[in-house]
Length: 340
Image 1 (cartoon, one colour):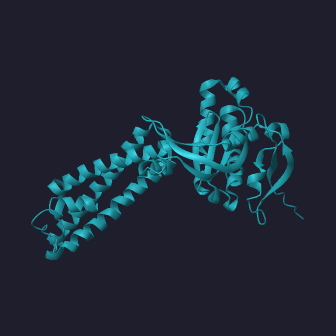
Image 2 (image 1 turned 45 degrees about the horizontal axis):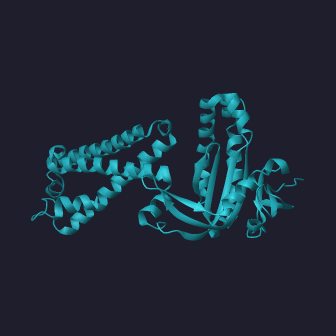
C-alpha cells in the first residue's frame, strides 16, 4: 500500500483534496495496509482450514482475490455512507476527508487494479514456496548455494511400513490418496519444530534442520511421535476410507554435508554426503531390530536427554548394508509413566 500511495499521489504536483500535508499520505498507506493486510491474512486462514485447501490451487487464488476485492468494495461503501452522513450533518471537516462517489473515482479503480496485480503476485510466490519450501526459495533467490558449501545438518527419514502390501491392496489411486492424507498431517508438526521438508520420495519423506537447531528440544523425535499421534487421532477416518491406519518407521542421523543448487530449468538445493546413505541404511534396520525409530550414535550423543519425555536405548554396534564399519545405534521411544 505504501508503494500504491507513493506512485498514485506522491508524483502528483498537487496533493489530494483531503490531504493537508505529505504526512497524510503516510497515514493513508498505514491505514489501508492494515485493512488489506488483515483481509489477505483472513483469506489465507479461511482457505487453509476449509475444503478449499483440497481444491486445485487456482480455486484458492480466485477465492482469495474475491475475498480481497469484496473487502475493498465494503470499505468503499462504508466510506460512501460516511460521506453522505457527513454531508447531511454539515460536517465539513469529515466531508473533506472522504471522496464523494468513491466507487467511480480513478483512484479507487486504480486501487482495484493494483490489488489484483498484488494478489496474483503473492499467489505466485506462495505457490513457489509450497513447491520448494519458503527457506529454499529464499536461499535460491539470494544465491546462497550457487557455490557448494559445507554445512552440519540433521536429517529425519520417515517411511511407511508395509507400503508394498498396502499399494497392492488399495491400488495406485487409493494408495496415492492415502499418502496425501498421511503427509498432510505433517505440515503443522514440521512447522512447529522449525524443520523443513527436503524431499518426498513416494511413501517416504526426508526432513532436515541445521544441526544446532535440530538437536534442540527433541525436535527430531517430536515430529515422528506427534505425526504418529495425529494418525491415531484420525483412526475412524482412515479405517473408513482405507480399512486400516498407516504405520510409519523413522531414523535420524546427522553430519557434514555439501549443499548446492543443481539444475537449470528446474532448480533445487541438494545435499551430497554419505550421511544420507547411512540414514537410509539405518532406517532399513527398523524391522530387523523390531523398533519404530532408530537414532545413530553420532546424533544420540549430541541430544540433551536429562529432562526429555523420550528415552534412548543403546542397541550396540550394528552392521549396515553396504557399509564397511558398524555404527552405534539407539532406539528412541516415549518414556513410560508409572501411575499409582
